[in-house]
Image (cartoon, rainbow, N blue to C red):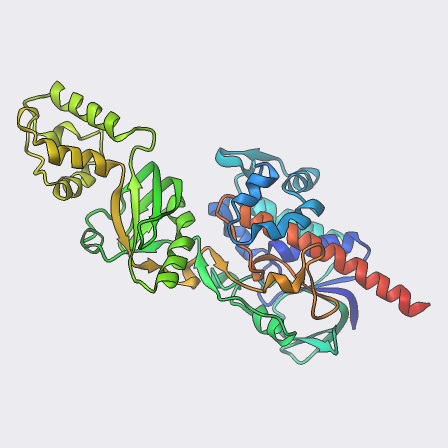
Length: 428
């Protein structure tokens, strides 16, 4: 049996590749090793599926720090605006939330998964689940098809590899596509976890005294061992039994990974700005005003409500205060140190959780070996890659799924065009 295009992987990029290829007139086969399509998509966005981000193109690409510029050609073919129109044309109403995140009005990822799978079926794509691929077949400089683990060979002039990375492996992303890419001569850049919680050996982390404490609207900054500010992100965070997590932390995590490797160190300093909108001087004035207003009270009681109660003992200890001081006997230098610390609570982080526990895989198929306009391999004719298997990664907030949809659509569209052109050439 043969097809114009074979797509391996039923995630967001694979489903979109099928749709684009089928709409391009190709006979398409979708192969997935699992028993259900769209598994990772179904848990994205906290189960609500953040389908894309509405930011302007340059700003959107800026939120994909892992080689986002590679996506400009694909986004020219199928942009975030096209993604929004695509779902709305299928009757999926979307809503924009903070920071440009786009969700289905239903707040259910199942709405998105069902729509995509339904579209794939309506276009006549053949689907095989529970059918793991053993290898992609090559002959000279071109693709021939695939061999399933059952031993069956399915022929095709174009194969789209959309198998994902190695993060969230229970959804089927176990790195299957990397060996097939290497067999074609491709380079796989080093894999590492991104969008992943940070670990710490700080005593207050190990004692779990702050476990479960959430901080809202803070700014987290990552510092190099040489004291250089590398990156900062605002948002929410939470203290865990192993370290730090939450949106601001996840966005900073890849920089921690890179710094640890670059400088061959275990610990990297991050600081938490509890009041990004205020200066140290403004904090000093405000806190002194609070203390003066209740001059007979211990400052640990005065500051309750202004600062998280559970954080106060740590802040006092690190600034040289006991917390029992009252307004009239506040030592100036420790109080100044406390106010400075509110702008930069230091935490030494020792690394991240594993790649398996990350939301996104960093690294992947080397982009210089691909045509960004088509997602086709420069080494093997008819071989296309899309989605998280590429060395492209962004922040959470709809950026990674945008990369998956745009590269999937681009790969599917161009695979169909090439397959049909090849078929016409052979019949002449």
